[in-house]
Amino acid sequence: MREEYDFSEAELVVPPKDPKKTRITIRIDTKTLNWFRQQVHEAGGGNYQTLINDALKNHIKACEGEINKPFSLMIKSR
Image (tube, helix red, strand yellow):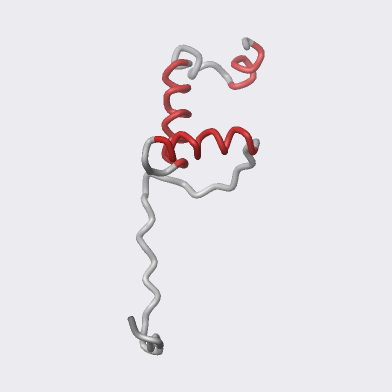
């Protein structure tokens, strides 16, 4: 390993965006986030964000009968 590296001619490479995904900022309870992180850790690695996305997809599938109702009706029915 070198003591010093020359990055003077380096170029910033930004990975392409996935057109199927949208970047958001969301506030999640710390205990909830830690649970997802722990699941990934116990599985030997992976991405907790993917796990959260999968959990949301599964929830939508479970509520599919309700998904076509107006949002306000979905809230009141719970």
